[in-house]
Length: 428
Image 1: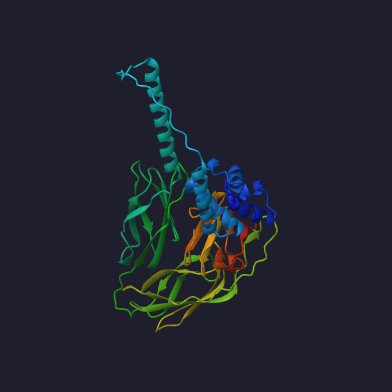
Image 2: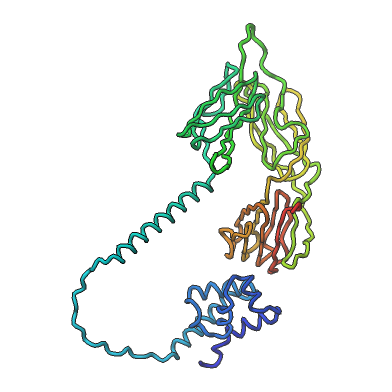
């Protein structure tokens, strides 16, 4: 091999030794096998799986060591081309002339048994896959009647019907009386729901009896208007039904109430006290990382429109903390409520890439995320979700702003810094 043929290996080995790293540790943290790392450092490219995989190894290994991946790939191209030029080429031995023989297909008992066994195994695997997909998916709930919100219902009951999973339990909540019903073998169901005069926010969920999984919540707002013998003035006073005073809610919650028909209802939120983290962050050595939460700003006002019966509803998303809500119209007295907003179950993290690109290596409950071990571009937004823990490894910490369970934590470190966090719930 010509002089300088191992320059790539020397660059990699020198960078690794300068950081005090051993190949077994590098294998654990980069997920590149030790024998491939050793082959790169020795310049034995014939021991590597191929040029495409080798370039991928160099990008990940270079980002891990803080080296320029494109420079490493250029060295690899030069050295692999030199090795190919120096490798002696062997002439293929002459092939003897053979008389073409006509092959006959013979069906033997062994071949028949093997074919049957293959079909049985394939069918069993397909069955297992089908059962797994059906077990893991969330049950469907579709409300067909009423198809949407009802603004002028004149009865104190309403018939609700729709489709869900066969034999699933459909439950009504958020009303004075909350009945439930079991769907038939085809998934069809009907249930009569009692109402009260005014606005009724009805929530429905379906529970699959086989998997125990619960569907997404379907909502319908039913406004009941009663017959009155003599005319009455339009609703002028503002009433806020949801959220209740001093309620503890998750980051996204519903707002509903009544006002003058057709009135514009403005909802504003003012932060009283920022939420405290309900999670714990440690580095790869188990050392607790000191967090500096960034207090969230007040969101822009939300404008809702009351319908012809005076009912209004909507949804608001707020970071964790204590907030004061003010709901007001042009007429009537504003309503003020203080609420506490806490995180949803589990862990939710948002990574906002800003000011440059960064290598990301991400696990959700021990499973690599879809974008794991890739380069995130400037402007990318990555959402993570886990039940127990998150592992977040970043190659350019100064370009990554992170929010966990609705609490902003700013950037994860300095520009060019490699940072790894493990996030777990505080109670664990």
